[in-house]
Length: 222
Ligand SMILES: *Cc1c(COP(=O)(O)O)cnc(C)c1O
Image 1 (spheres, rainbow, N blue to C red):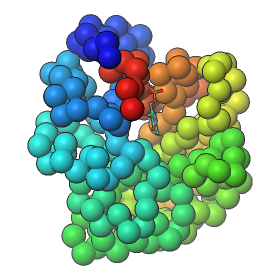
Image 2: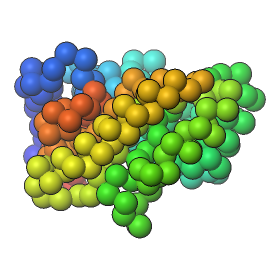
Image 3: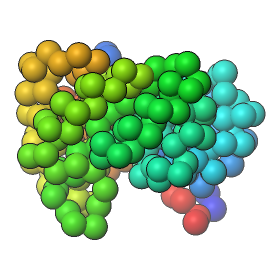
Image 4: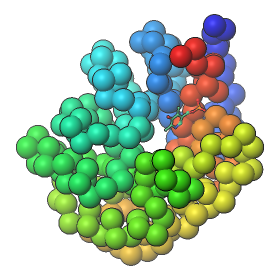
């Protein structure tokens, strides 16, 4: 596998990001050494898809960066997720939110979360459908240990970045709508959308967290 000279790549990408857009490194399958290299290159935000994969890395490097959960979170992993992560980007049900709230109460902390939107309304994908998001956020607003800080979406995977634009736009409109409701414990500050192929389109549509894997680290070998 070809390794990416990550410092140069990070500088190149940072130069294209408007002020206020955060670069999150999607670190699935990457080694501890690669994550450390990314920290040395200036990355301060990492995303993991699985609690088990994140756990040893966060235990080793925890204080040197921020850690977001960006994969579907199973309820039986909620307790460990509350201990490990600074933010859960993928809350998509009241049952999961209630579980997280309970574990936060026990741990005496409040947890920033994003609501994952299934912007393509795909049956096989996680995330709440756009039309169901408001009701979900209303219910989560009543949970005292969670802070809804924005929305996250993947959108249908297409080869063509431009094809992602309508899904990003749908999510952005929802973000603005929900922000305008002025709900307790809800403040729309983060819009996490766009991956290696689509992040420039996502930024045009208002993303302020972009999640990059292959663009930073190179192709995944597994
Ligand atoms: C892997 C992953 C990314 C990054 O994908 P790349 O195409 O490698 O940039 C972004 N978001 C999520 C949720 C991911 O699982």
